[in-house]
Image 1 (tube, rainbow, N blue to C red):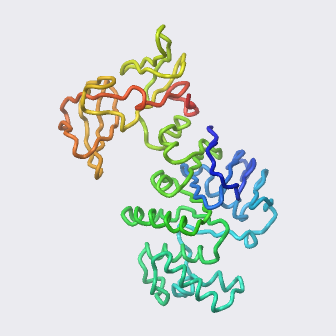
Image 2 (tube, rainbow, N blue to C red):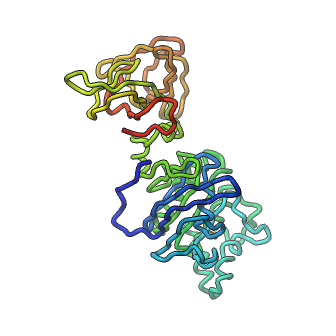
Image 3 (cartoon, rainbow, N blue to C red):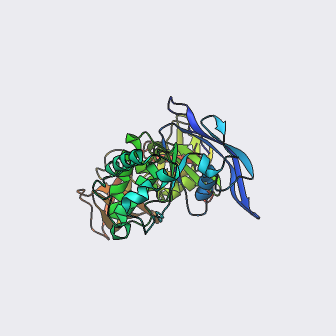
Length: 366
């Protein structure tokens, strides 16, 4: 596990210390601890069953930890009931009231808090404008599209101005095109309000697009915490690399040849600035290959597949009996499937080195 040491200057508003949770013999959380800064969007990212939603329920007060402490604004809140914590929750299914129109759905929490009618009206209209639903107040929520319902649910969660907003897979049931647009809108809205938020997802694209920092979870533990770009550039373990979709992993051996430290692999020798001895696993980044054939390690391969991905083309190439996935710009002059291809690999920036061997999911970054 790598601890993130590049926190912002702001003081943390939410602190988790040693959170453990079991259901019977099933341990779901095992010593979770991290901090969230005021106005920060933090994503909990991990596969299904890793404990993300359980952790969210503990922060909200819906579940109690077996061990550990939750602090908000410097005060411990473990014994404070959910409705007194001042937190907001938004779920995947939105949970809109079907017998209420848009305005009534957004106003519901404000009415329950005893807010005056005129103040409620101002707050609801302000929030609907914020989420792009001006003029939707009288609409029947059952007549709205999925994206519009999502915005109503967001407005209802934001209207009480919660200290912490928690979102549990809120975009999971929306089609891809709409989801990509809403990711941008959601980040803009949260930052505009300087809203502290926790966003739960198993989708790395959502986490990277929305969050200021990401907590990668695995089997109830924190695997890595950091900014999205840092996690992508330097995954802390083979598990993180694989979870992010980077599968170009090969075994190697770190040696010192008398002049420099190198890593010997079946694809060639990679120089390294760190003294490394013994077995390692090398991750070759999917964007590390070029077609110029001039700089770096030269490789001969055979084009197996090409997949158009908008501005990128994903190519699967056989090299030395192994399959490797690389990303190229779509306008690159790639050979046809079945033809040979010559590549150059960046020997330093194009790799990440892990101690241990390929089969060890716990292999850590060197």
